[in-house]
Length: 222
Image 1 (tube, rainbow, N blue to C red):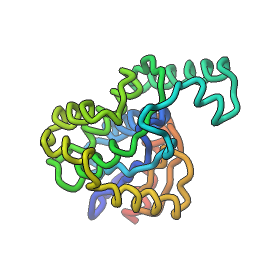
Image 2: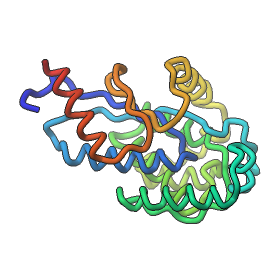
Image 3: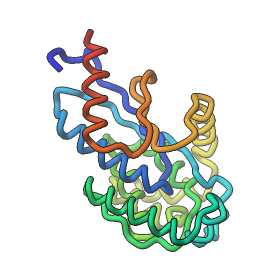
Image 4: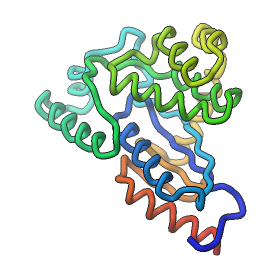
């Protein structure tokens, strides 16, 4: 890139906390942005998508749930998990043991709040913390105590973080955004949307993100 963009590149990372490929994709995108450095200013936000929107508060056993949902065997699940662990390690994310699948709606509500009312960078810090808690530590992202802890560590107000899961704040916002992306054609995640014009699908390697972002920036610069 020889010319700077007149304004920051808008990157919307559509994803779910429950999606392991979203953890891989986000860390790969982070690496790509670090390589690009200040020559490519970006505005990165995180948009909601739920893989398991009807999941109850009790959660479900991971292997049983995935077997029923995708029609695959425990052996296939184990192989998929091994592949994902390998891809995660390549971009600096360590997957741990996660025995249950949980609902993520309240986590998305906090992410919307963090974007709207939090300090700079808080939404990104919370997103990373949620992915680590779920995929790295096997914690429940629908547990209000977990949400308050992670939000506070991300620099957000703990008392407000406690109030949101207890009420309905940001519920309509999450549903509206989910519907927007579904109408836009996003049916799998991660979906990385650039300037509302370009889509990079899946947990791509850093090199793929870097090349695509360079190309899009060059096209925008004319």
